[in-house]
Each structure stands twice: as structure tokens, then as C-alpha cells.
Length: 139
Length: 256
Image 1 (cartoon, chains in turn yellow, blue):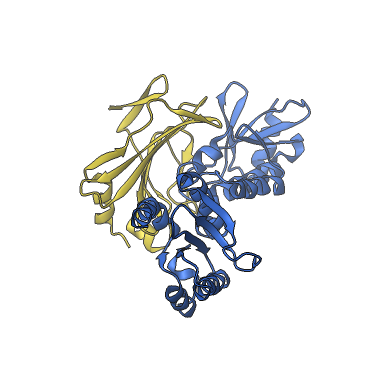
Image 2 (image 1 turned 120 degrees about the vertical axis):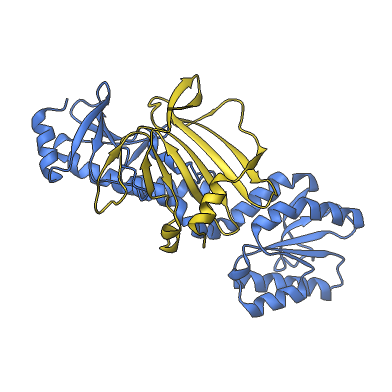
């Protein structure tokens, strides 16, 4: 079971791209998609970054980091656009709006929850669009 | 399309936990206590239906976009499961847009029905293990017939003429000593593979037997022990086989 320290290390450790993203996003259903594969510097840990953006609602986008352990894939961290409402506790909702992130925690994993339920509204990024690419700008 | 009376009625049915916000012209996003497990509100919209007497409840393709983060509907069996969920919930699918068209007085019912379906679809990835178990042979076949095509695999091979009871799942026949591959994901087919290998040995056939297990925990210890005694090589999982199959086959071809 991963600790919070291990989770943070997985998210932040230096990685190398083992399979780069395609030059152009591909079109699938009503969204564009791209992804690339990474590994830790020593090659022992494998990751995928997925990128999705709705074709019409450009504010509906998602960029996430998957960690592939031997047993399963865990969505460690995800950046979302300003797509609507998000709550931390569904049974005690205090809705947030705006750009937000999702993160998995040790507590969630210990309770058999693989969903990145730790939500934080963020102003760390906004988005500019250049054709099909997202450009993140520090605010 | 949406009168204030209509909106007030929906609000009343949701005990006031309901609002509509115009996302784009004539597209209204539903704000209601309908959430995904990660806390994101479900992406549900109300818009005009082609039939002016009806209202369309739709997701504009956002459910499948969310599902695609870590799950692909990329086999006939997964498509079958997906389509079954849609059919059971009266949801239609147009280029990834999921929707139902309802009469105005049934929008509340339609929203709950739609939310149920969205939840089931996005949770398809949770059944990965179970899905993998039932899709093992499909995935094995897909891998062998695409990635190992250059080794000319033959499906359903019968090494002993007129004895179709001894069937090999795949034969790689390019060498003096062919490789007979058996996929195993339960005790029954483990025993069949064991019986076949023992029969071929008794008949003094020249072959190498290769077992691909779905995983180490799908068969009991005794069946595993018997299989290990009878077969020449085992891969403990489909993933391991997918990683090492080419390397193994190349080595076998060089040696024989």
C-alpha cells in the first residue's frame, strides 16, 4: 500500500518519455485524445500521461498521470478544466467551481478507494489554445 | 424551450438541489447532486430534441471521454457489455453522444435514469479484473493473431489424426519441433492441457508445450503441479506472455 510520501515521490520524480505523444491529437467520439508513456530514470516504474479535450467544450479537458504497478493502474493526479462543479465529500458537499486537480491519497487507498478524490481548486494554470494543443501558463 | 415553471418543478423534485446553467446557446448544464466517485459532478445537459415535443438529456460525449482515461472499449465483448448497459437504460448513442429524449413531465425520471447509466458506464473500468477473466481467450487470440502473426500460428490444431479430443489452442509449426500453446484460466482447461500434453508424450510426438496462464491464482495448487510436470514452459500471466513471447519464440526457433 502506498504512503502519501511514496505517492508524492511517484508524482514528482524525474521521468523519461519512453513513448512520445503523437504529433497531432486523434479524434475519438466527441473528444480529442493523446497520451505518452514514461518511466522512472531507472526504468523500474512505468507511467502514462493521458490528455483529453472535448471537441466543442474546450474548457472540458483532463490531463492525468497513471502509475502502472504490477497489480493495477492508479490515477495518481489529474488536472481538470473549468467544467462544472466538484465536491470533496459527496455526502457533505461543499461544491467548488473552476480549474481543479484530483489526487489519490494513502488514506483513500487504505480504504479501498482508487479514485483520486482529493480535490483542490487551483489557480496554478489556465489554458490557451493553439489549434488542438493546450499550453499551460503559470498564473 | 425551458420555461421557469418547468425549471421550478424540477427544482422542487430535487428538493431545491437543482439548477440549470446555459453552457452554450440552448445547451443547459444540469447542476444536481449527481456525482462521480472522484467528486466531479456528472456532465449532464438538457437541450432541444429533434422532436419538438420532447426534451433531450445528453452528455455530449463526456462520459466516454472520462471512461477513456484508463479504459478502452476495444473488443467485441466490451462493446457488447457497453451496448447492454445502454439498452437496459434506454440510452441511445450517436457518435459517442449518449442521450435520451423524454416528454417534459418525465425529465426528472429521465435524469435519474441517465445518471444511473453514466455511473454504470464509467464503472466499466472497475470490472477490469472480471472483464479480463472473461476476455482472457479473446485477448490471447488477439495478441497471437496480430503480434505473433509472423510465426504463422495455427488455431485449433489436432496433432493426432482422427483424435479431435486432443486439441491444441495454437500451433507454431515452423520448426522441426513445433510449439503447442494452451491458454489456461481455470482448473478445467488446466486439466485438459495436462491430459493433452501427457497423451502427446505417450504418443512420442516431437513437440514443445507452452502454457499461458491468465494468472497464477486461477488454478489450484494440485492442477498447477500436474500442469508444471506435463508442460515444458509456462508463462504465469497474459501480460508476461505479451512481454516475452517474441523473445521466447525467436530463441526456440534458433535452437531448433
